[in-house]
Amino acid sequence: MTIMSKEPMTSPAATEAEPDSNRYPRHVAIIMDGNGRWAKERGLPRSAGHRQGTENLRRTLRSAVELGVEILTIYAFSTENWSRPRREVALLMRILEMVIDRELKELNENGVQIRHIGELDGIPERLQKKVIYACEKTKDNTKLILNVAFNYGGRDEIVHAVQNLMCDGVKADDVTEELISSYLYTSGLPDPDLIIRTSGEYRLSNFLIWQGSYSEYYYTDVYWPDFGKEHLQAALEEYANRRRRFGKTDEQIDENFEDASA
Ligand code: IPE
Ligand code: IPE
Ligand code: MG
Image (cartoon, rainbow, N blue to C red; front, top):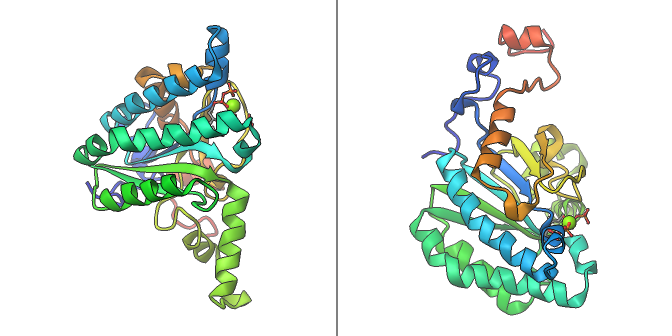
């Protein structure tokens, strides 16, 4: 599988009315939300929701590959999540560590390339080492790129990009959108085509604020632990039926005009 090989979404095929898996998104990002409420509804502690949510990630990875997703970006811990009770933060750290310990071998065998987006600084050192190891170990895999957004914040990412640009002595006139993109954690990857948020919340919560500027958004009331393959497929099908205009008119898309300014 070559990551860059699919037709762009504005190709003539993209104007057909029927859902078509060729028009499924290549890069899907998920805000995995609702673990706490899932647990609360069952009279369980929030930790049970996080555990169930982690279990669901395994299922989702399998479903994503089956549905032809090439890049999956998951929001696992935000820069704002440090404000949660200390015990919950510690649990979320432990969960990532546990996932790496238990799943790395299988993920690697299944061709998953793990990448981390976010700040390593600030997370426990032992976990930092495991994250680096997991990324290094899987770096040549090509079946699915899994971006794990952990200690990730979109604004934080932009601040770091600007700091690094300045450290590199980039001149003001040389700053372009492409250059900024290349300084983000997602450097080299296409922007997400589709961003899904579970649990009925309608916000980005500081997720991919630069990269999501032209993404399609899909919201569902389903809590993350219950978000199964059928829900993922429904999201992809809705995406396949949307028209991504990128500022152009429908007529231009129908005629596949390349130059909107003509
Ligand atoms: C998402 O579930 C997991 C993380 C943010 C780490 P929540 O823990 O936010 O669950 P709710 O929103 O309280 O239900
Ligand atoms: C967003 O969910 C972060 C993750 C899913 C990791 P939150 O539950 O933290 O978001 P808010 O606080 O409701 O905006
Ligand atoms: Mg939440």
